[in-house]
Length: 509
Image 1 (cartoon, rainbow, N blue to C red):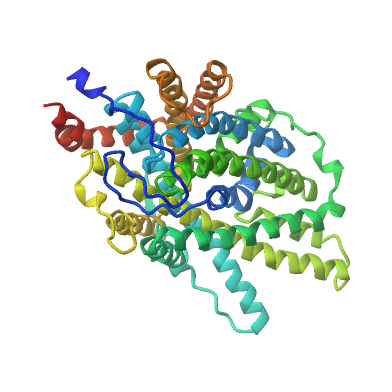
Image 2: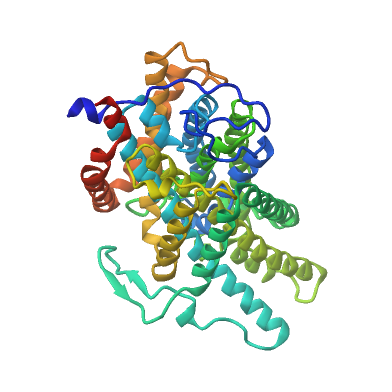
């Protein structure tokens, strides 16, 4: 039985794909998903997934509660771990341009049971992250309605009963309690709308994402340019605030903040889930993964430095830290002045950019999860219904609908903020296995042609795995019961369904 658990897929590198050529999405000879994405699309997908909650939501919490101005270092630490994992993703994605991301890579190198474990953790990354970000989107949407109400003199904002979660966790984070509201309607609406877009097709989804990415990147660059003259270097001192106990400031706070802001980076590997739909994956996948990661890291560092230089870091612990920082600057300029008008207009743009940014994160997450289910279904580990592809739209439509319904329920009923650490932990474990998988495959199949090779592989891969596990441990000591419970549920599903229906095992018999 143990041997069967660690059985691996027979693996052959995919043939080189010329632009537009439909190559077998599963590697078995059956044309499936539509290859329509270019390197530009893939870079935009990566930026769309990464630039969102990290800038518009998490920066304030991480600075105020853990790192202070040293949040810059926290982003560098998280970005370093992602860069190491990104190199490993790039090698796999160029060699095996399929839709299963870390799940498929693990199946080819470390065995079925490890692949299931990774695939189950990817559910945390995509499904729960989509729900979490949708709740953040709802907050900015309500802020926009309040701004419109002030302009027109009529209150068009939603009542709290329809705009916040009816369930939440108590202070211990262990028990669910009622809040007295009905449903978070905007969160449900954005998930439903984006799920419909994903159902319609990959090209439409990627095009809409590219437009959204352009909007939010322009606004972020505009924010950096306009606020540069208002930066107060005194607010960066002390750069690393003195530790106040536990993970509140000091180096322990910087490290803990790195785990928190890692949530901001989790979308970059969503690029790899689109490998089965890339026109020229051997060339474009490394560009998409590493290009988007580099651009996003630079933007995160610049924004974290700007926010802590515009307002005291202790005042940034709000759901909208960028708007909070602008409000602080507005309070220090004469009312009615040209500077006041410029900053006020910038605040409006920031709210709209936040809506756009969070929308693109939800979009890419809801694109990624059905494709993970698609790959797991094709291997027999999940019901075949999840592997169905729409004849016209060439999308995994059943999985898209199911994921959309579940994400809508989670977003509508729960604030799910406590699951942020859980999402990061699941992602970090997936990244770790990819780093290890590259080393394993270099040893077991050195003959496979590799369009992209990890440089200094015997240094990069172990260091990447160690960095991801280090960050995983920071959250695990607090949320251990959540990740263990999630893992137990996953292995029960595998034991009762996946193990019995595995096509790899059936073919072996």
